[in-house]
Amino acid sequence: MAPNRSRIVQWIVIAAIVIGIVVVAIVYGTGGGGDGGGEY
Image 1 (cartoon, rainbow, N blue to C red):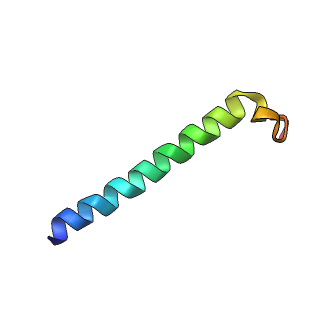
Image 2: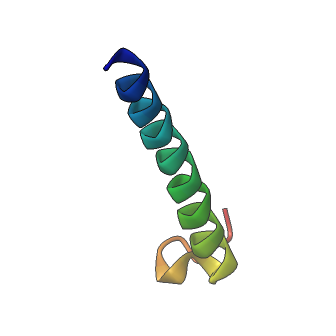
């Protein structure tokens, strides 16, 4: 059970990082989407 749980936690961390990168890419790629104007 421990290895499975560890793997699940690992995938959650990986998914969180990937989602974070995607969100940042979308926000900066669309000029901030009107939130900050992408000038920062």
